[in-house]
Image (cartoon, rainbow, N blue to C red; front, side):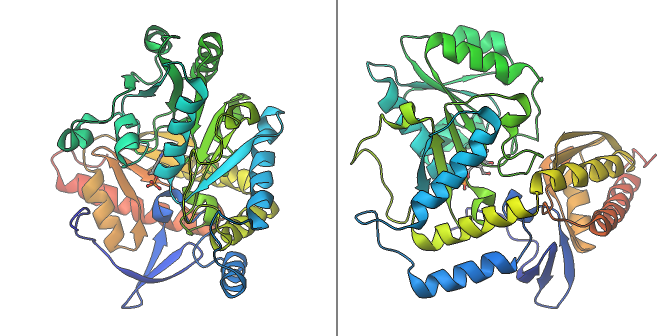
Length: 391
Ligand SMILES: Cc1ncc(COP(=O)(O)O)c(C=O)c1O
């Protein structure tokens, strides 16, 4: 179906930060399938784990147990609690980011009960494309063709505590769903005290604080989860993207008291939590820990920020770790990204005037420097071709 634009390139192979097309042309992948392939393409530990698991046991359904699901759930719980000091959360495994958020939305309604079913999310948010997650997604132009949308969703301005304060009706609201940094919305970083204030409001009004870490999670921002930079204690955390380094898998973590609201039959997924996907997750998380990807993201991010800030036409750089956007002085992001692709670099025009970069967390300094060189040329040439010049 024609749900995507014509692809500007087609790839046949990947290795680390590199992608190759059918002609053998080499590209630096600084978008990683949208923050998915955090360990780089074809990581041997993940490849071996998946190959071995597919020969051993791929799938048994959730009518039966498998040994990987509880083991991986415990690892996720440990990584989340590393920032909060809490213990004993529980995990539901899904197959994508949208499904992880669907789980969170249903859990909030089940937990709150008593007519409290509203979930508040933010303008400009992105939470997925299923009907419920599209409704939570605060982008009216994406919703317009699909009206009427499910009931029970309210949007407020992002990074606006007063707006949330006004909307957070204790009689109707079950939870608040937010990205700690808005990824698809343009790598928008809120004020440093915003999420803490949201936490206080949620606690005061007995609503769940649900953080969508699907893009920001798993080391991407220099912490296992972006909320940990602020020492927050969320009630629900969703993740996907980098969780299986390319294996389609998502997860919804919740504090044990919240997770307890679900009973048998309340939610499910045929593929969710199957051994094949979780073998990829287990291997991915083990490599992430061994390589200390959080430190790698911070160091690589510092080098990339410094380089991006020096590029022609870049007025500022925002983001955290290795999830960054370069704000351009003119709306030439699409043309610059297209030119960069032709010269062997994948980046993405996250806004007409902003370029997003999200390379593998294991990216090498030399690869960062090479990418900066290509980007400098691409932005400079596109600006020179427009009336603005390229000072
Ligand atoms: C923050 C966030 N939430 C949810 C999603 C949806 O994930 P998926 O495309 O795996 O359904 C995305 C995808 O970009 C995302 O960035």
